[in-house]
Length: 81
Image (cartoon, rainbow, N blue to C red; front, side, top):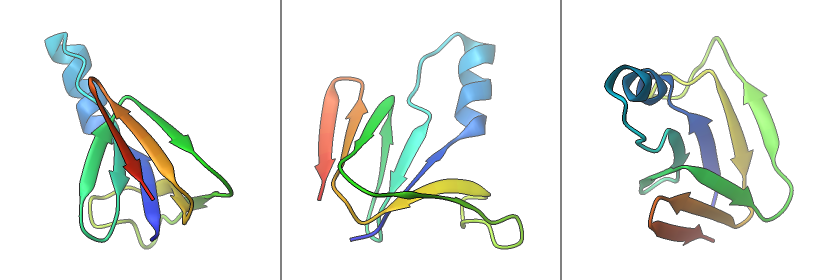
């Protein structure tokens, strides 16, 4: 299953403005989004820059992988195979 990982700039700005620490890394699959503070990728991946065809969320740069991703979202850890 393909995973796309990107940084949500809006969350970074909101954290700075409000003094919060919400997770700003998004891991997207075809069926869900998971938000994390830290992500580990268990194998090969690629960084994609696509200014003419961004993701539906608006991201122009992201990491793509078919490998296992371990996403640490505060107190939750999710393994996306």
